[in-house]
Amino acid sequence: MRDSSGVERGSYVGLPCNVHVCSGPDSCFGYDPAVLQAEQIFRQMFPDEEFCPPAPNPEDIIYDGEAGPQESGPSVDLSVEAAAESAPDIPEE
View 1 (tube, one colour):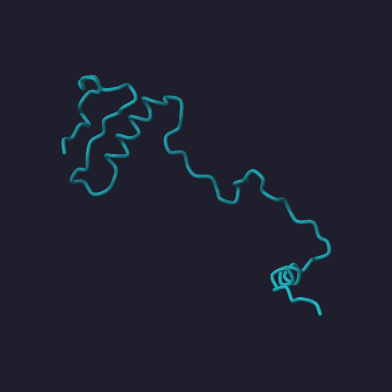
View 2 (cartoon, rainbow, N blue to C red):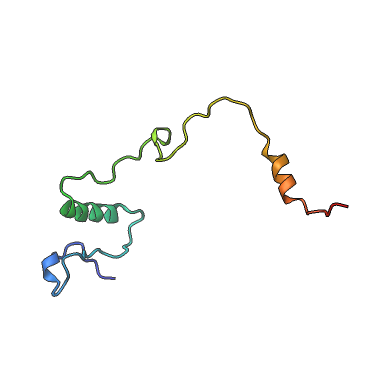
C-alpha cells in the first residue's frame, strides 16, 4: 500500500472536501504513526478542540433518567403475585 502521509491533499484530483487520505499499514510495531496522522487530520477539521481528551472517571458519570436513591418504605414481595398470575386456571366446581 502506498504511503500517502507526505502527499499534499491538494494533489488528489477530484477529491471531495469531506474525504481525508490516510496512509496504510507500515512495518512499524504499534500505532504511533497512525495516531500522529489522525491528530493532524483532526487539527485541520477542529482546530479549537482537544484531541483524544482523557476519559472521565466512571464514578463521575451521571446518566439521564437515572433513578436517585430509593426511599425506604415497606418492601413488597412481587414473586407471590407473579406466581399467582402465571398459574394455570383451574375451573371451580
